[in-house]
Length: 332
Image (cartoon, rainbow, N blue to C red; front, side):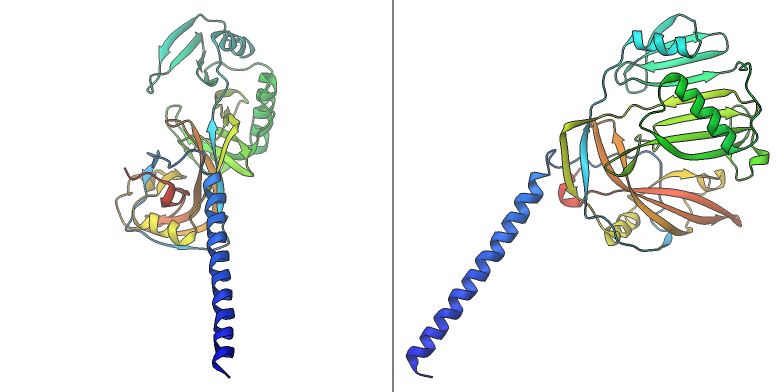
């Protein structure tokens, strides 16, 4: 090879390398632009999640699977309710008492309408409400199974026009006293059934910041609805972002750092021993959305369902972990 041929060959290689580097930089830039275009809310606050801290010294195993790479973050902007709407709801519930105004723990106003044997607490700020009843309902049939309780719950919601846009989450048999109920797997021992319904957004289940389903209806053995609640979650379609989320390795790291929260357990035995080391087998991991009420956002979390053993008893539990990557969480 002559010197001129070598120079020409070297020049061609240099041009090719320059083109490849430019293309790579371009792809990185496009990727950054595409990612940043979805970060409409900037860095998010590290949420003060409700629930008991997951013991960071616990050992655990996963049944691993493929996880999503991104998830939505949306502005939660439910339509404001009114005292008039509270009265309409009270009429449907056959509560004829007078209304009184008060404030909840967050300082938000709510309307309370109470009559003999029943009460309604309604929050005009977002239209959420809770209902309690101590009176027997005439004409209802006794309830002996979860399926029958679900039928009663659906009929109750239909009467209130709340049955649209939700789907059944689960029916939990409860046993205990009137002031303290615990889950049980034995329907024959249940004195009440907690029927939960969830809303789906972006293909995933949606919960309140305390991991409560959108609608809950508690039915007793007599077929009476003794308790019900509705948490209004309504996103602003014009304010939806898309954030990168962590994978299984980072989920494990956050659990080991004590950043998980136990939001469900079917046994009181667990809550009494949260400070102790235990072994957890996580059998399912799914993306869910929680309403961050403090920041008015709907945010993605990983929910891990699993089992542990406490005092030789198997205990089911659910642990949640913030799903957004550290890059888009504020250092607080």
